[in-house]
Image: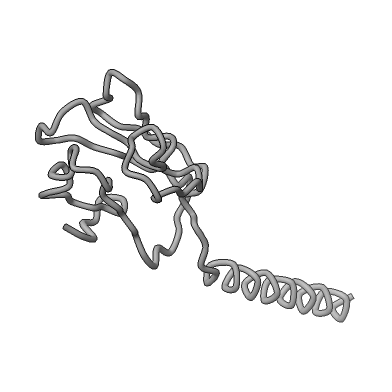
Length: 125
């Protein structure tokens, strides 16, 4: 019976090592983790321009017309304290954060003084 116990423990250890190996591979994959995640902003523009579309994976920057520019979000004004939050829903290894400003002249200065956080850690300005 002790041999059965040792065999069961050896099988469990092998299973744990397999799972750990798969987790390491999964954590090392580079992908767009913000795709279709929940978002929220604190200073919503009255005409819409919700933050939800910034993570929808649709990219079209061949135009400078607001109606055809995606993805972007717009706040009601340029006041201090505007926030945009992307809720990733878990812990991820973040390799890169990309932000683009709008291509037209409207509201480009709103990214001046921008702070980028991952959780509570400041990762860029």
